[in-house]
Length: 299
Image (cartoon, rainbow, N blue to C red; front, side, top):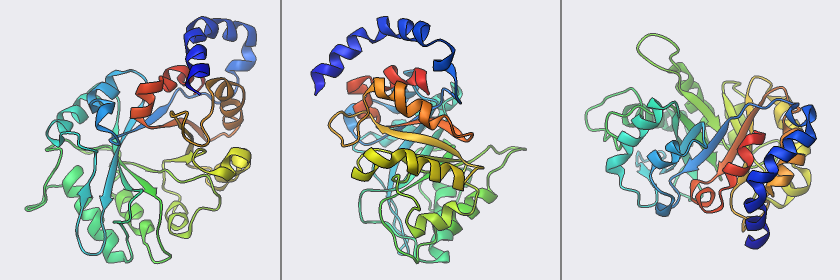
């Protein structure tokens, strides 16, 4: 599969100008925002966080994952062997050049749950003091005094008892828009199925999520029905901005060829008034394929 994309990539720069000229105003129509979010932290060979921000490709980077949390009070950050010592300085650098950096909680493992209000409030307390504006004796700050910009819910499993709604509401109370603080971006990155699983739906139903990244990859149903699901998501939460979640890896089910992003994904998604942009999974694959460099002009 790599050869066709390689040939397409080689012709991309020359073809882009021609496409724009031929397509005229219709290509520019819609709700384009230019916003591209990427996940970072899933492969040590993806390069540093600073390099991702300096690439000029992304308008937000999400560190993944805080993959252990729950009622026993244990927490674990997995960033695939990246040296934690340098990440705090990279976060500050990204913020300085205008690229906010969030932390995603959850992931593909089984080490997390939030089965009570107390567990949710304890997780908030940990997040606030370890990654945001708090400071509490005994709470280790992996990134030093760097203050992250948001929290993302990437929940691959859960139960009806999980209280991510409580966590979201507590985070929202600290979404400071004045004084010495700064906004805290609250986002979620679900699979495209709608309605979502109950434990996530309770959280999103609070109406306080700024962004939702709907993953249209790695799901057999999404390949055929993502347009329908997208419409359901965007209509259900009109106050939330929705991002199309795409994979940069050709080997992942549901990968979308850049030309199909141009002709189908972008114009279809941008019909929604609350379209927000693209989400790319992930920096490692994006660095290998240059996917975002080919599709960001359509966001």
